[in-house]
Image (cartoon, rainbow, N blue to C red; front, top):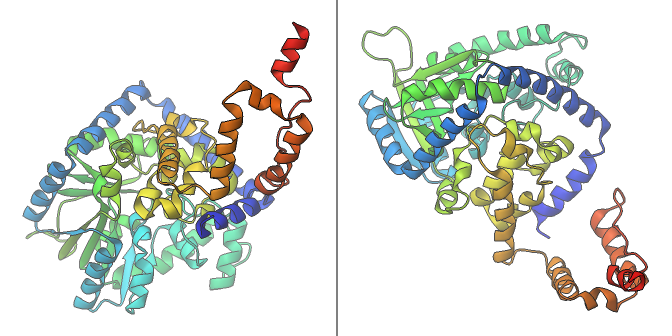
Length: 457
């Protein structure tokens, strides 16, 4: 068993029976479920909208190189600098060079899972530059010394009481402060950071090929200020974020909002097509776009699983997944958790280290059912499990057991050969060491089906 797989099993066994965690997640996701149900109700034909979005994203995947080059050409024409990073280290080298070039002391950063993926905050701190999360949820987990718990709602695992206690310990705020009072406090802290930071860093929800613009959607206005106040705006986006045309945002904006938060539209939807132009009063003097691979071409090269790159990071599959809701986001120990993370992470970081995540699913199909771009997630999870077997990455004990079961189950006489007590005695250690004490392994009946059939006949 790999170290990651062992740690996953240990962490899952602890958090699954943590009542405080379970109650917090149940409450927070119930709010999400109610909002999303309302959001879906605004659609005359949600299935058609999903079908159209899926068609566009498959078109992108069929011609990914063409659309990326088109984006680069149009973005460069508007004055942006476009760089390509094959790995996280290459992206961080570009960013730390920019930090040094402008002698930056601080970065303000809007919510971005891509920056979490490359661990930007730690890299910036290592060269003496403070990196401040400006999304409220991201700010909370950064203050707590944690990572985002969820793709869309980073602090989903914390109750308002947890946050009040955290802020009391870190900032001396009132232990009984209301959410509104805590939000006002954070707003005051961040306003000063926005006006003094030399660099603003964002991700991109969409890269628009025909205009060369990047699109950022958010609910707090922090992303807009991150792009506007600092003199240098750095964009870090995965290569899969590209879409062909600006007019298609009219389809994707509502889909992303409805599935992510239940809103009709996200509050702030910004379209940025370069640095401040002559005659414009606001905006950065310089805009740098980094297009990140970091394992995405490994996934793209797999014709069976490349559909996972159609994901728009709405988080719907996490919220619908019974496994995610039981074991939480941190148990996965990777940037992207839940069903989509279990599919893509082995390609990004290696099947040997992270292939076990593809087994963290009941295959109930809820993830595929709620996906706005119709990614067949259960099929891809099964495909990953098959790839683990094909690559010989199963544990030795599992291989031995499965070979023995195959030999036993291939013939009816195999099941009749040994008495029930002997079969159950073989299963008992598996029940103790495999399932644990929270679930019982089924036992064999005293007589097999064929024995019972012959007797009754």
